[in-house]
Length: 164
Image (cartoon, rainbow, N blue to C red):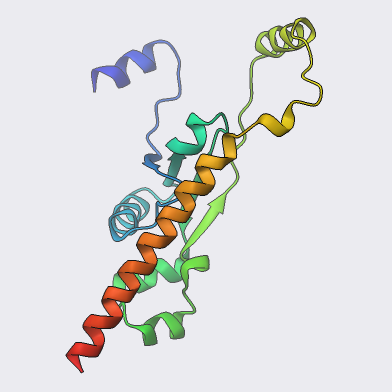
């Protein structure tokens, strides 16, 4: 609350319209994310969640994505029905659960001038792009994540078969 007052004193926009969550290699979809965004979005209509990928950003690729729940996902959560039939009738899937909102990052003109001057001072790397192995660890993390999810799916299939 004191931070909000201080921001107001220096004329900074201090309206709270969302929250953020960090994720590793794009693993951000969870029930907790759905519940939190539902509560934020029903209380503040303009609410968004910003997902920050720590692994990609550590490799030098800034990865920020903003999402909002689709109206179908909000209706599904209100009904509390998470059965496959409810998903089919409301036409909700993983691809239509959240709507991605584009993020635009702008620098001040002074920062742009400084960056262009630094760009002129730095020598160009010619022919060394093949040595950039920044994506190798991202690929490795994706593969590990996929293996974990396949193992979880296999375990669920075994449990389902034992239940029958």
